[in-house]
Every structure is written in C-alpha cells, then in structure tokens.
Image: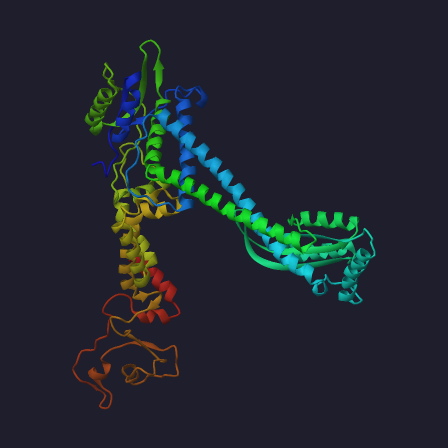
Length: 560
C-alpha cells in the first residue's frame, strides 16, 4: 500500500561507537532508509565535530571539477583501464593537492609561453611588413587630411627628413611599429591625425586572427607603422598606441639590422614551439593518468562529504564516548537497517555493537512514498503543488495516467504527439547511456520525466485522432466531411441536392440520401428511409471551417 499511502514510520535512537560511526554511516547510506534529525541545532556550522572533514571534501571536489574541466578542454578520452583506488581521505586530499599545484604551474607556464609566441609572431609580421614599407616610402598611404594635396604633404614630410639627413642634421624622421586590434584601427587613425594635426604617416595591413593569451581567444589584428617628426609627436603617438591596446615592437632603421633581428625572431619562435609542445605533452600525460579515476573519485568524495555532513548532526556523549543519533525510519525497513548496522560494526572492527531503540513520540512523522523510475517524475510534480500529510492518500498514483491524459486532451495532434512519443521512447530505451546527464540542470528535468513525456506523446496522438488534426491541419483520413456547404461547388454529391444555392456561402447541410428517398419529379417518396451521414471516427474536419470552431472544440474537450 506504500504507493497509495505513505509508509508507517518510527523514531529510532542510535548509540554508535566513535570508531564505527564512519563505516556505519556508509552502510546506512547504501540502504537509504533513514532521515536523521539534527541534534545540534543550537550549534553553528563551525562548532560541529566534523566541520574540518566537510571542508576537506569541498576542497577536493573543487580540485576534481578543475581537473575535469582541463580533461574536457584537452579532449582526453578514457581508455577504460580502471580507476585507481583513492585510499584514505587524507591521502587522496594530499594527492589531489599536489596534482592541482602541478597543473596550475604548467598552466601558468603554458600561458606565458603562448604569450611570448604570440608576441614573436606579431613581431615577425611587423618586421616583414614594415621593412617593405620603409623600402617604398613614396607609396606610403597617409591618413586623410582636410584640404590640400594629402599625398604631397605627407610625402614631403619624408623628403624633408631625408634632406635633413643628407645635410648632416641630427633631426631624423622617427617611427613606431607594432600591432593593434583591427576593431580599434579606425579610431586609432583618427586620433593620431587629430593629435599630430596631420603631421604623420600611417600605414597598416591586416594580418588575420592572432591568438591573444590574455583573452584566451583569436583576435583579428593589423600591423601598423607610424612615421612622425619631433620628440613631442613621439610621446603623443606612444600614448595613443597604448590607449588603443596596441603592442609596439623594435624596428631597426637599416635593412641589415632588420634582417638580423628577423632571423633571431624566427629562431626564438622555433625554440618556443618545441618548448610549448613538450609542456603540452607533459600536461596531457598527467591528465591521462587520472582521466579514468576522476569520476570515481568524485563519487567517493561526495559520499564522504554526505557521511561527515550527517555525522555533524549527531550528539557526542562525553561520558560514554559514543555518538547519539535520532532518525525516522520506515517500519518495513527495520530489518535492513539492523543488518546494515551489523555490517558497519564488523567492517570497522569495533568491539561494541550499535544499539537501536525505538522511541515513542507524539511528533508528526515525515511523509515517505516509495517510488519507482516510472512514478518518480509524477511524484515530483505532485510534491511541487503540496506534500501529502503522514499516512495520507497519495494522488501521484492516479496522476501517472491522468496528468498525461489531460495534457493529451489539450495538446491533441497526431503529428506533434508522435514526435513527442518518439522522443520519450528514445529517452526510455537509452536511459542507461544517458544516465550521466541526469545531473545537468536543463537535461536532467527532461531525463527524469522521460516516462511522462512518452505517455504525454501517446495520449496526444490518441487525442489527435479524435480531433482529426495533423500538425494543426484538419485531416480527412477517415473520409470526407459529412457537411456540405454552398462553396463546395466541386463536390458533385453536395451539388446534386435540389434547392442548393452555391452563391449562398453560409448555407450548410448534412449529407443524406434524400435524393434516393424522395422522387422530386413525381413529388412522392420512394419508400426508402431518409438517413443522415455521420463521420466514421473522431471530429468531423468540416468544423475547422466554421465560425464557431473555437467554441465547439472547447466544449467538446471539456466533455471529452
């Protein structure tokens, strides 16, 4: 009767020896038949006995989540070699701590190496592009200037600088080269033009997407070089480049120095690629060693956390040096509980058995319904509206059928119903393979209600046949509509009735055998009984074209 009415419950008191508490809780957790009361309500979370163990478990779960994220990021597949046994909780905590420290150090080193490689790649592009621009000064494109010959003014800036160099003047045309995000290029050029009043040359070229280690994504960048004259202009250009997220790189004036620097950058890039590859291989190797164990360790630590969290609810008896607990238990499971207590004591090697006392109380016991995988989803829906009282009737038993049926009445459609039923059937067939997704916030709701979804699809399909609708389109799969109307001029059977007026679009009548039962020429009956056609199954599709369709369908659904 537990499906129809909540289980009969008893309040039990447990006296557990300290050494046997941990193993005993493990065994009781496997039974899953006790709801422990908190005996330390007056104490805060920091004053409880096992608070440090709970914190240690939280720390290990954090490390395991971090490790699992790295495994997913590296796309490392399990080779099914079997999980490594975690050992004691202290040993596992030390091992995970060392693993986290090592992985974070390698991540920091890898990020630094990637940043250096990205900078060297950008420097390589700057050296190649800027060297070409500096060797073709006459073809440099300047920023737009209002009025006058832009190219002539800008080219004149370089000609003056060259003339000063030939005349022995120390004043030379300066330049700053580097890379800047392509999205900032337009504003960067405009700011440069206004700050220097047009006394500069800007040349740029897009180099495509470059990995940005600070953002962890590819960013489209452009190589640029700015020619200017004077120290004040250099300070302005320098600040503007920094403000727009630009990166400046060394660019020698002479071609031989540029080639020497380019070869040096290429050598450093090759060396960095080797170091990065070795670092990645080592990190993948460390992750491959634990990829089979992460899920197992996570489950183990979660159980340990649940054990210590429950032990924090126990009261410690200083006199007898034991833990005292109170819990609600189903009367039908008392034998299983006693057997679990015996196994826990034997497993821990304790010399004193756990004592169980049934306490008489006037407290209202909690409500406990035994659910199967078929009724669990419906029980959750019913509990969301209100929990039944102790020993009260459970409406979820009947809601397993009535809820999907009422959904089918509202959602009735053959096409949509079949699609929903197929989706629910696939979830039921592959429920074991999809069980790991049950913890997901979004998919978990769908997975736990898979049997409800299947039944809702079945009843929606059934109601769809009653409504004769496929994807909201009226269907005549069981025959033509039994109603005739004036606009059905192509239906010869309807137009054969004397007195019909096709021009009258509102005239409607049921199909019948009046033409056979009455001789209109002689004005007398033929002796045949007059009968009216009835649609063979479900709703007549002719109602879909009537003005009162909504009222008639809603009324039918209420009666259905």
